[in-house]
Image 1 (cartoon, rainbow, N blue to C red):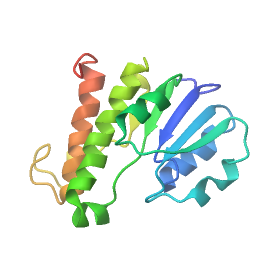
Image 2: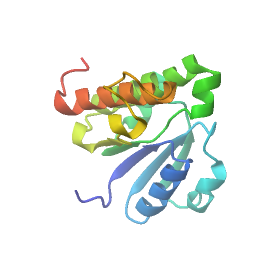
Image 3: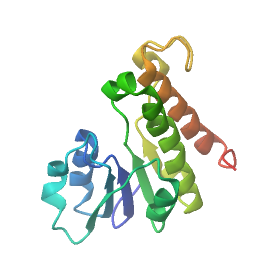
Length: 165
């Protein structure tokens, strides 16, 4: 797919992967970089802060209305925002809200904005990557289980674009 002069939203933009993706796309596209800066560092985006085609927004993916607002006028979404393993152990309910609920919010907001499912990207987690016996069963930790749930949501959007209502 040609990725030039597109309006691209990146969640988790201040993280390691998100910031490097933003660096790569900033030369050719208009970027909306979204992060709550709970894990990612604002410094990771410092080199992009003065670019006219880049907007950095502090937002939480669990805020459904805000995600709908941010997805408007976007062509592509890269969803990279996650709760880390430390958080999943210390605060599993909050981690679930971010990893599963936040992912669902991003997917539904993208769908409502008319972004085709093929233009919503995330880190794909394969069951074998964390030693899963079956999707969501026998996971190594709670973060793995949450990523499985996010993967199920993503597959539902891609495989059956009507599946989310």
